[in-house]
Amino acid sequence: MVFNSFDFLIFFPIVVLIYYLIPHKVRYIWLLISSYYFYMCWNASYALLILFSTVITYLGGLVTERISQKWKKPVVFLCIATNLGVLGYFKYFNFFINSLNDVFGQWNIQWEIAQVDVLLPVGISFYTFQALGYILDVYRRAVRAERNFLRYALFVSFFPQLVAGPIERSKDLLPQFKERHYFSLVQVRDGLVLMLGGYFLKLVIGDRIAVVVDTVYANPESYGGYYIVIATMLFAIQIYCDFGGYSTIAQGAAKVMGFHLTDNFDSPYLARSVAEFWRRWHMTLSGWFRDYVYIPLGGNRKGKLRKYLNCIIVFGLSGLWHGAEWNFVVWGLLNGLYQVVGDLLKPLRHKASRVMRLNGATFSHKLCQTVATFILVDFAWVFFRADNMTVALQMMDSVLHADNLHIIADGSLYKLGLDWRNYMIMLLSIVVLLVVDFLKKRGVSVRSFLYKQELWFRWLVYIAGVLIILIFGMWGVGYNEQGFIYFQF
Image (tube, rainbow, N blue to C red; front, side):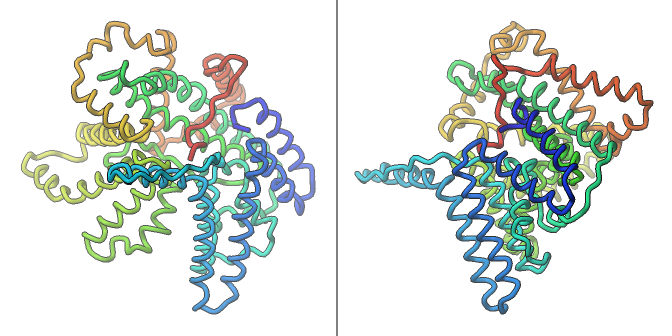
């Protein structure tokens, strides 16, 4: 079941209605049942994996809190190894087998290991990391171990953020399941407006851009050069709207029921450096790797060389987390390398600015930094979006030898699946997105502004928003809803 399906539009109101009608003390049980049903709509048997991860970390938390200090690390290590073992089998086993077979082939060793035929469970990377964060927090005494198994099971499987995050911390989400949430029209309104914004990002912008991006990346031999440049620039917006749309819908759905989920994006493409971009992009994953990997490795406390090595390791692991292909690893390493090189060149940049008398506070200077950051991030997206490493390198070579700039003006772009009307809708929607993000970065909330207006005006905006999504959203034949990009991770 996905957020942009008719099934969810039936499922969600029923869950909310019953949630507010039943007594507070059993609401978390109802949400747990609903969450497992939500997940089992994909594959019922894989709900056993969530249950397994839940049982292991729940028992691990109880044991860790009660045993002596010398036994805590072995217990936590066992919990982590067990969970990562399950994740590794389903997500990375074939990747390592293929890599090993490639090595054997390079050395002319006639031995090929067979792959396993397994389907990647939806959301396994997200709920595994959320559960591991809990056991590590208990070990660090940042939280007390949860005694109520069903409440903890809900923390791991809460349906709004189960499949693609945000990755919540136990100290933030678990206590909310114990709170008494009363029905509030304001709260429901805020949640529904958030959901409306998420659907706009996904259906109007993300899925529309996907038509062009998928056409080019599915056949880069025919659409080389500047086709790849344009498609990659659009993919940067697509993945933001697709993933940001999911996160926003998740936040809105949770808010309708009185729960607060962590922000996952904060105007990332207005960042002025790659390091700032990663403080604004998929913030819950970045925070997870910072707190549970980067800092334990030593962070920036053991000299610059170690700091740079830790950064490269973390971003390499982040790339591997996203996908079991070498192009994802390269994408992660490239983003880590950007930050290392940026830090190394910082003194030189400051000196050049003084010599050239550049004013870093001016709009033009900030704009140049933002554009440069986007170019670097967008270059890395090629490795993320390409089918594999070989295709990514071929596309890079095609861009370097591009000689088809004429496609921008001769109508060739209209052969990529969108007509003139849809291109105009896409461009106008992107402008709206950038304006909203710019205002957000300046501390101006569009929703807060809207809520201060007269009732008739607010309802006019709400109705217009629904109509825009219904009229301009990308609907397949028979309404074949498009999945979210991060479902594959």
